Image (cartoon, rainbow, N blue to C red; front, side):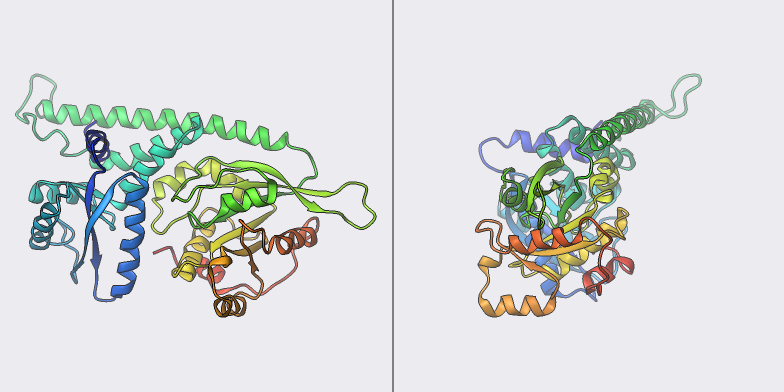
Length: 400
């Protein structure tokens, strides 16, 4: 299969002497604020570095109407390509999701390889997948992403009429073969993941009875694994986007009930992080992994308190939780990395999110508040509380 994702993999493998140099693009419509587009490109830059590439330039392309052929407009693309080549970039990275034909038209116009945000995230996931389940989930997402983009991959082949029983030439036949093989592989991967989901459910049922299950969720690189380590003593935090793809579950000590013979414990699961414009193919493929979130007794929503995009990231998390079916579980908002904030900012956050726990996973500041919340919550029904704005957002809007 000669899809765009395969071409990107070949490009990355070929660039062994130095990181692949790329140029970042984003569309800015009439209603989009320039500051917001700049923040989106900042995140796209972090994604490129997480994929082992080097962003060397960026551009907001202002356009009121999306061009059906090249998305941004042929003239804009030609101008950007000239600047990209001057900076020795070999790859155009687009923050917007493009159709297969738009990618091919951009590549034809510029003579450069083009990749959209979805394809980039898939590339990162493929690099990071370690377990059998994660590899199968990423492969399924990649094939579902590539399937509608197969058309035109074999246009270099002859398309004249074939022999008896054939419609079209060998090029058209090859496209159909690719589609059939891709659909077959998708079917095989779905069956494999169904089996692995049953295995996961059996493992879940085999855990110690009576121990509540808690899931850590949140925006990618917000400090979930650091918090897992602070609570359980296990976990390997890394300062990178999507460091965790496989769910890790460990036992955490909470404390002692008055007069109890044994201490209270919970099982804490670290899960894959969320991000703006998380590809729907990945959400669907990681259904079994995210089942740990859906079936948890409570959620610890971890956010980077020092991020300038904190509120937007919380809305993305709230909407994603709603999309995967998490509506009724009690949840505690944990504003992590408060050690990076001055005192006035901490006070502002406490006023904005009065029910949140302000923590630093590295110094273990605020962890007693987290343990106290879990001790009061479990066992027993959740206490009624007023929902915050980022939680209300999940029922009305989708992520950006």
